[in-house]
Length: 82
Image (cartoon, rainbow, N blue to C red):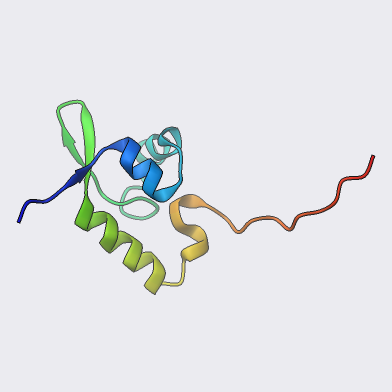
């Protein structure tokens, strides 16, 4: 079976997190915690699709759904009056 490798754009679309934020997390050493592990091919990074799905599964099982990709719970909406 052939393993599919996701690009930064595909990972960004899948997680709904900007590629800039993903690269910031990599530079901060948060791979494996707030971000699935990647492999480096030349100057680019790729994420094995199976690793991404396993990472999501671990996030859901640990109950840290609100912390996925460094996101926090959304703020309560308020009505702005002028």
